[in-house]
Image 1: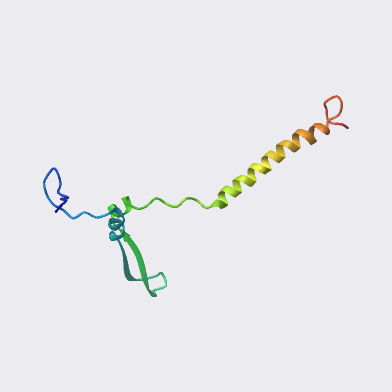
Image 2: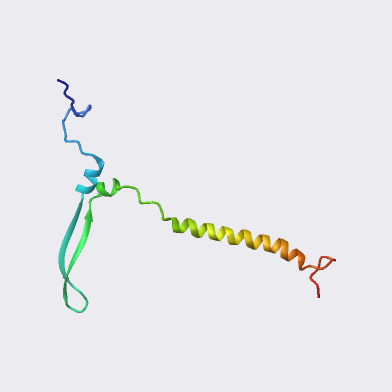
Length: 102
């Protein structure tokens, strides 16, 4: 029979081992409290409370949507079109001497 120990090599203690997602989820909680607003009305507020360890082990944020990439592509096409329009049409608008015709 194969037994695996997760004891610390330094102190020899056999502490429970948890996966990172379990520590992240375990460190989050919601606290509900009642408080008064500026008008004196009582309202119920729920706040998310997170431990420092849970924040440190939080997963990386999702990558931005493709909307930003499409916007960048559109801006690039407009920039290239403007440049080419200036080169071809702007050069045709000049007179034979290189100046702008009167």
